[in-house]
Length: 322
Image (cartoon, rainbow, N blue to C red):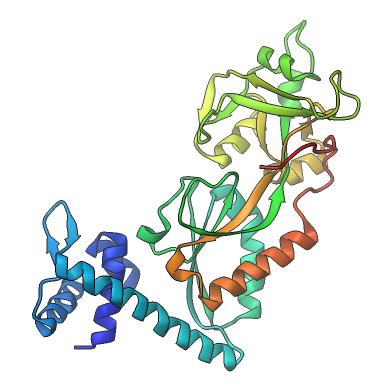
């Protein structure tokens, strides 16, 4: 039995709470993984896990052993990474998570460049608009946009992205008589709005008065919008706006090409929408990974230098950012 490998597998099984998930990510059969853990238990002379059809939990002895082994496994991984760094080469898998739209439109070009800089690194890119459990999924670093919900994570702000209220020319060309292009937040209630359902208050759209607005600069105003379509996907918001279904309240990067060509229009230029922070977050036990640090530094350098504002004519952002 390879005891180190068995300890590594034990740590991942406990973190993920599943033999099948770890077997899949490790490329081994579930039975082979189970045999490794059983062999470790025989060597130690103690049962570490209690397994049922519905649950997986550590025994009392397993809890004591797990806490020690998790630190040991992390230290070994760090020692190996340090040695490789001394040889000027990062190696192995890096599991990265991001939202679907951001991953496709922004992160993919950065991943390509990072892989070119570090040819011995392999990236497993997981795209999902849901807030996945990083520990359970074995994620090394996640790129998250907006206010962080998770506690106990190591977070570093690497940039920010602008948002805007946008509409396709098709939608605007079909406005009924008497309905005009919105210039004030309150006028949005007269329009069909595509609602992104993931935030805590999805129907609340907040704005900040800028120069030229009908309110003092810095005044915040929140409106409750309605519409006949909501979606939990940023890609769904993009597709709905492009289809002319309604107005969208979304990161501008989703519509970079269409804003450039004029197919999509940014509305209410005198009213700003607060920037969303972009953070790279990692589970605490992976905070010392050289690959994570290198990838996070790379993101911060790129996003800080290039930014994510495009040429969108949005009013100056006022007040504290999220």
